[in-house]
Length: 563
Ligand code: ADP
Image (cartoon, rainbow, N blue to C red; front, side, top):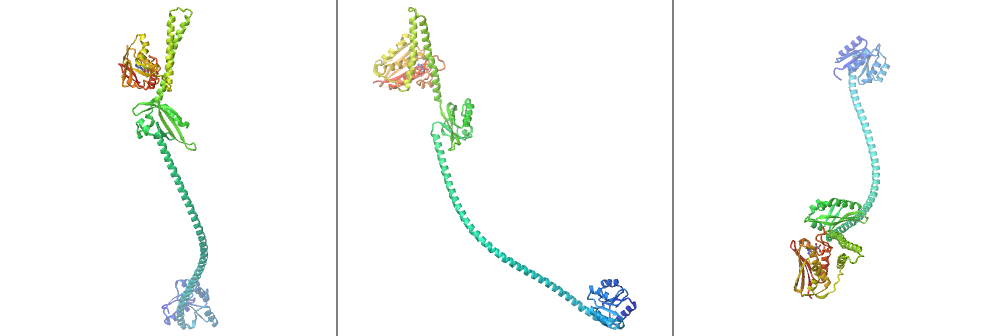
């Protein structure tokens, strides 16, 4: 039993309560107690006094033991509840005990109460323990139930999982099958891809080969093209379609004296004559615009600083589809051609002038003759006839020269050779000059040498030399003619003491239409005489030449083979 138990006493009668307490103390029970009389006080004591046992009177004025018991039972079932009352009847006691009241003690026999209390307290302890154990059992049972439930749940889970697993494995199988189908497909695809790859590789190789072949062909054609550009005698270059020069042939570098770098930097700008630059650049632009090619002329500077006329030709290079690829340009040196052109133009004007002079004179003579035609004794008549004849001779000579030059040019200057004494011909042909008496003509040398030649033609050559000496060396009063035999050749020289000829012009003297001084028409002439002489001497297998010193005079000579 618990030591010093707390006893709650529900009793409205104070003397009964005192008696009860006295009796208990008398029995030797050590305890603490609280006496309550109302329901409110009872409930308060239950909560705050926390009794180990309750002793209750059976009936109270505002309350009763049964209600008190029920209140106690609802919250504190382990606390023993003993009814201490007067006589309440055997049946009631049995009923109370049945309903759970711990015990009953009569107020008349209080001596037994202490023992009942002790027993009730002991029972209470056992009950309490039982309750605790029951609680524990209940808790354990509950826990077991929970655990069981958990197990059931887990089992279900497991079952579910197992079911899931079954489904999953079923799914997996399906997937596996699908995968293997996919795998087969993949393998097939892979084979296809391999095949395509192989075809692609072949195609690539073919393409590469084609590109290489094409590149090689291109390189070959480019090198052929460049070689061709190098073999032509003209300066040549190529322009991109935008006009940039990308290649010059060697002739360019040779002619301009520019190196590659300078050519790239300056190009045509420094080579073209400043007076031709603007026009030339316009031409370049215009031709490139038309895209059909074209040509124009300009003066290009040579490495030594001299400008020479060039014909510039720009030709477009197009591909099979007619698309522009590049421009090829050539520069042909036409300096000589331009000179010839110039000479020809000069010649035409000179020829017209030369022909017009004797014709005008002839016309004047004829007009005068016409006026005096009715007077045959007029003193002027013979003079006019001589004058008219002279003019006609002059025209005739000019026409002869023209015809001869044209024949010589066509290689049709025929000769009819015969054997004759050279000095004789020379002497005869100088007769016309001698008769005029202004010039002294002396002939010296081998006067007997004979040649096999066309006398008329040789005569023509000597007359031309002598006439030129008279014409171009008027201050030289004496004209000497020398005849020398050197080995098996005879050399005839016509020497004057005239102004001479500048050395740089000597080599052109025998060219067709060439005249040293074309500017002033101080001396008439077509520039054909010496050319015809050259052709005549060539036909005779001889040589022709001139030695001249400025201010001292000139020696025109020719040689003929002695038969
Ligand atoms: P042309 O007398 O009709 O002009 P030529 O062929 O006979 O033609 O002569 C060519 C040029 O040679 C002449 O224009 C002249 O300038 C020059 N020439 C010829 N002979 C002499 C000379 N004796 N002295 C100086 N110059 C001469």
